[in-house]
Length: 499
Ligand code: GLU
Image (cartoon, rainbow, N blue to C red; front, side):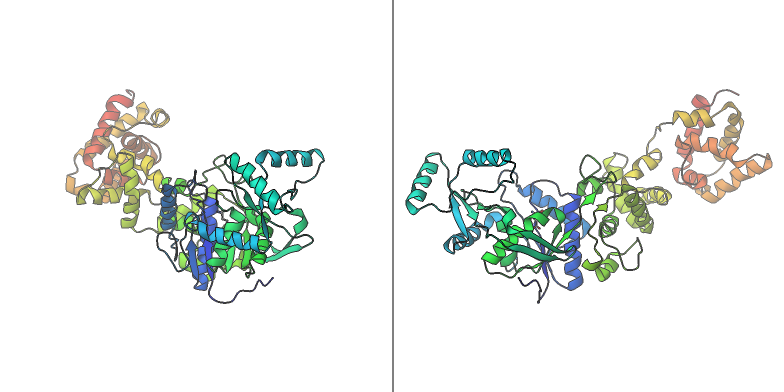
């Protein structure tokens, strides 16, 4: 079987639109996309939507959305068309039926009339005998008369025969996996598999090959879960007299517990990461490094750099570990790279969703929110963290952390808070800047020979409700005179015990 490819690269991903897109699938999409972009090839999106009950256009929409969010654009697909479409299996049924008929005519496939009950009995018998189950081929040798009889019997039950592939004996089915090297399977281990259901719907191992042949796919890059399907697909290529594309299986993505990433050991869907405030460029960078090692070994890689240097030879076959802490770190790095305006634009939806900011803030308010979020740029790791980090800027009444109050707002801080308040009351609105505040409060500390923490920490707790905040004078400057004075008064009246 020829496995060398010439001509322009054409790769694809073929998700089933039956639910939100899993991180593993988007990872496969990314590697295909990177390969296509690096090679100047074509990246195709097509849907395996033959599961009529579970497939839904809403899931297709979600796949578009997640891919666009990550910047994975496709060149051909259900919504953009292309020369070899349609790109939904449900719209290509005639094609599969035509190819299945061709296989029957040429002796590579046959109708099977066995009922599920009969098949179940066969399976049980094999199990009892301790043998791996293979279909008995009972229907392979039926005479025309027996076929007609069997078909009539099925019809009475409202059923139609399925079509099975006739697996040849004594063959070694082999391919040079782009990532794993040579893989071989003996055809004798493969049961005559069903390629078409009675209702004219194709099964995966057959439909995927018909799609890959007719869409002129040159490289199949997919998850290692499909390794066991490949021998069956090789048989279909062979039977249809088609050239086999290059095939590579990338490793699974595992959670830090070593198990396949799922809802149980973390967030498994792309949308979860968007909602939690991961930047698409950070997730892109992170996912690219799951299983692929950039030539310069650097963790932070721009999109352009990844496209330029991506290479299947540097993709490892071992499973990659999805380390959330590393993603958070990386996301933080990307957050710090944002311009102030970008940071604001990205944080706003989170603040609005939390009800801290109105739908359409005025330009002045927007500018002020920009100052608020800039204060946290160095500290947040996800955009969603902006909400708890800055809520005290937006709320009229803040929540005081009881531990902070108990630890910091002690009776002995009362004179300092009182003195600071009266100093702050003397600053005019226009003079309310980081520099003035610092000069004034530093002056008080120095004049009385105090430690900065003795004065500044009570102020911090009084106005933010917590012990950790961005630099104090910046925080006070952005909070503004009114909120600062009001909160200090409140603390003196309600929180600081009498000296
Ligand atoms: N629907 C299959 C999947 O998403 C396609 C596998 C393939 O690429 O052949 O896993």
